Image (cartoon, rainbow, N blue to C red; front, side, top):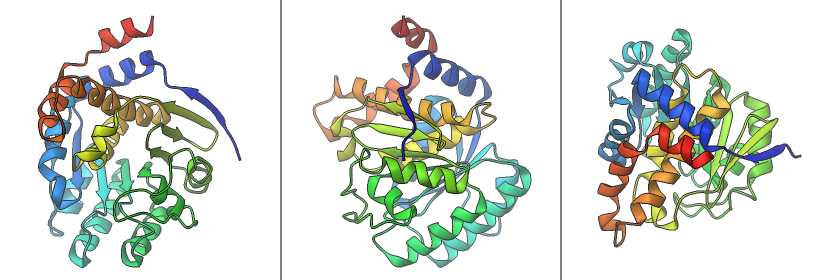
Length: 268
């Protein structure tokens, strides 16, 4: 099973980033409790507006007024899962795109069953590592805790199948990111291994995917641009950091500083 694979052009990233910053989307974030602050700062730095509304009594009302919703099962438990399903139902009723981040799916049965049930609720996008995407697609993804034991390249066929099955844009991230709608696939060959040593970069990426999906005329381009922006900011941050401890500040700065005009110039 193959699709046409092309590297995402910088001018597509430029156009998508310009659109997002002009709209300042309100992103409703139900995410891993470990990464909420980093995720919020990431969204603010790149030009979106985050809100971490998590109470089951409030999530449906807020999902209906947000521009996009992130569902991340990293620290899922019964009350949080109830809130997530309420938010998804409200988002769907309001036509709000939502993103599924299936953290550690395939490793533990509770979260795996929860995430697979969510696949029937029309996610606009799914963003995961190789093991998570393989497991969601029905294979044996493995995984070592939240880390992948499968490369993004080895998970590409599973990503394509998952996109075709669900209608979602599927982003499988790793050394190379692949973003597919089941027919066309963008690749993003940016980023740096140091990003895997900082808690929350993947979870924050899924929130950025949600931000880019808000009012997106082309969802495939939007998700691919989100992946490219985060990877490019990571590359730039590594240039002025000594390791994981000094990575976060220049990473947030890079997200804020990257300008569409610079990206268009780089595309020439």
